[in-house]
Length: 534
Ligand code: GLN
Image (cartoon, rainbow, N blue to C red; front, top):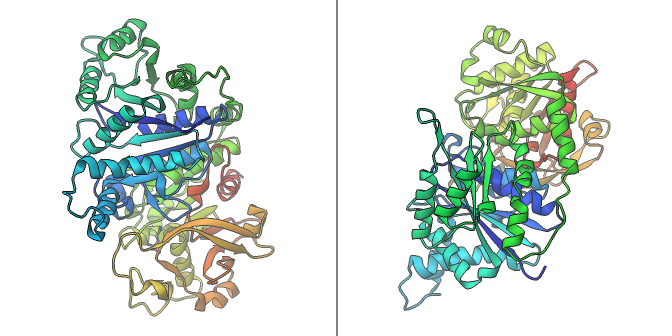
């Protein structure tokens, strides 16, 4: 294909309609036709990145291989497309403004008034075009966060308007709205959609395709009506009905011909059908599993499952892989206050996953869960803070160091089994300053993790400040907790394990969940679910 095409995905009526899933699904379909696709997310908030946001504000913070803290939609892109994203795949207004202001200080605009139009919009366009001009992609699918009409998203919509004006042939706009069913009237209502499209038109953008989220089938006359009122062709009104799993969405979109309509509207003559056979194989395994595996996810943000998005999706991938139906129990670590609580709240679980986290709240609950899992031999996977809790539990109950702790929570502990790296100690600002992104990890010969990965050198993504304190390594190993993965350069401990024929107890300092995809479930999760299924 000569030059990249740009597909913009905006949303209206309400937030949380699943723009990210629609954008990822379209990406998947185009990819399955043989095109090279990348997805980009533009977030209108002012934070430089979501790294400093509480998960309750914005869900999980997803980390790319290059160490960028990004929006959780990038996780959907990677899980659906099975390709890595990078820093340039996520932008926020904060970064856009930061770039422009830095240039202003440098003197790049000397003599000029720096304004939203053209300077901010130019910077937005530059960041979109940069992906297309890299020569690596046929399609750049750009999702705009928020809903049209928001003050913050205006510069983005304006940038789309300009790009459509400047390169109409290469641009396409998809608008996602919601069609509510009003029970009292027994009717689907399209007025909110009409208003949302009007709003977009007022900002200068005429959508080419409308995707209507709905809980009920949209009859042909309603589609026609939307088409007529919103100036789109009626086959460009696409229904996106509620489905059992998000992984059904690409197939639903294929059935609605979203990919064909996109290609036709971009003037691309392609009569192939997207080959979704591998995807369908996964869906079949996901839906046809008859036996259940019950996993408890112990964390402090469980009231918003989006806070653990990648972990939950990884568990789903791995369960389907093992022909198991995942029964997920979200367990609030704040509610685990004693061994007695663990007996009642953890006793029906096949596996326990101890979640990542920061700070004191809920931590003792995670340590209790680790203790329960280790002493009751329940398969247990600890991730990052979860791994650190496993280490602390072991130090307290096996090594006998009652006050063992992480210096994150107790800086005065006499047994700092988890401590901050020397080179982190002088860093005072909080944004983007953790150990972030992919690092190599050497697995120890004959360890359980080496058997799981079937390799000795792996690479996994990180997001933390604190580390296993190497001065305790010999003591831990003598007592049965083996350090089985190390950073080859710094010798930091990346993995601990207490495993035998009867026990699967593994903690990882990194975040394996960022690497699990539909077509490539992560070996650690696969193995954890396998152990839990026994
Ligand atoms: N709070 C811990 C640290 O900074 C763990 C972070 C995490 O779980 N991602 O080291």
